Image 1 (tube, rainbow, N blue to C red):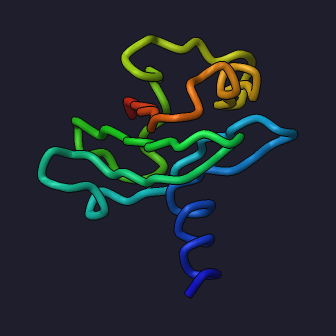
Image 2 (cartoon, one colour):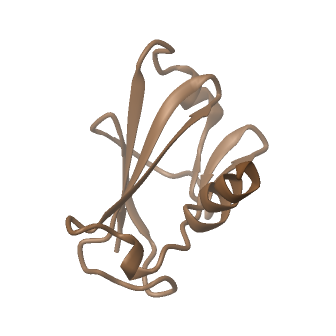
Length: 107
């Protein structure tokens, strides 16, 4: 069961570690989003409790969407470079005693 959960998290939700950074590369299909067009996963990364919520307001299929905007606890985060990476230093700056919400808009 643990391998199945790891596969769902890393391959379907595309939430992976990359050189200490958090990489977001979702491969979710339209049917995997709820009625609010959201799909969420909770995990611990860099010692922080994180909930990643993908929003797919246009109901696009995998391959037709890309990451548009990312917010962390309501604050817009600008991706550096071509990969959808959130730097480890940003994550380590978050409080360790609460859950943090990363909202990812798919366009």
